[in-house]
Length: 80
Image 1 (cartoon, rainbow, N blue to C red):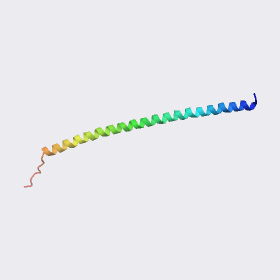
Image 2 (image 1 turned 45 degrees about the vertical axis):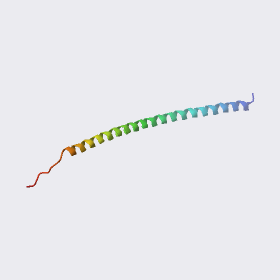
Image 3 (image 1 turned 60 degrees about the horizontal axis):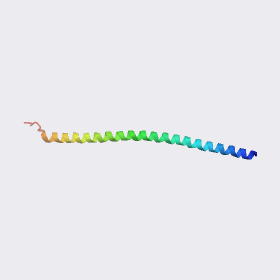
Image 4 (image 1 turned 135 degrees about the horizontal axis):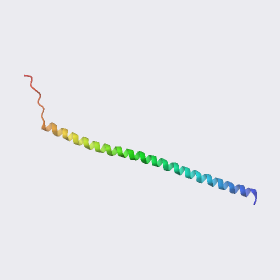
């Protein structure tokens, strides 16, 4: 077998190994970054849920205050 064919075969094997190695590393990195983004989204969703609950509680408190103001009439003391 001529030396050129051996060198070409070795070059092909090296190129394939480098290509597939790069694809695997890139895939692992992409998977890691997606996992980190999913964690951030989960934290954001928790904050949104908490805010929604707090807004509901605030509306209830505002209604309670409005009801209390309507049932209790403040009369300042006279200065006589």
